[in-house]
Image (cartoon, rainbow, N blue to C red):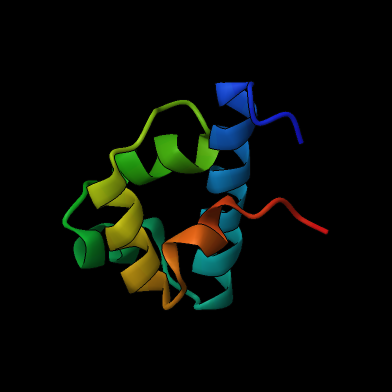
Length: 76
């Protein structure tokens, strides 16, 4: 992965959020409730189109039961 490309990093984060959300059988609405974000924001995160704050990355990690760094790990 090319970490100098912000689109690639957002894409990895979005894919990980989607994968983990589905593994927990959360809807986007449920994840939004747990993170105090709204559902359209979750959709944009999963699509990799927005830049997140560290606070939002942490909120997603807590809701999904992982470390924040896990959200940025490229798939093996």
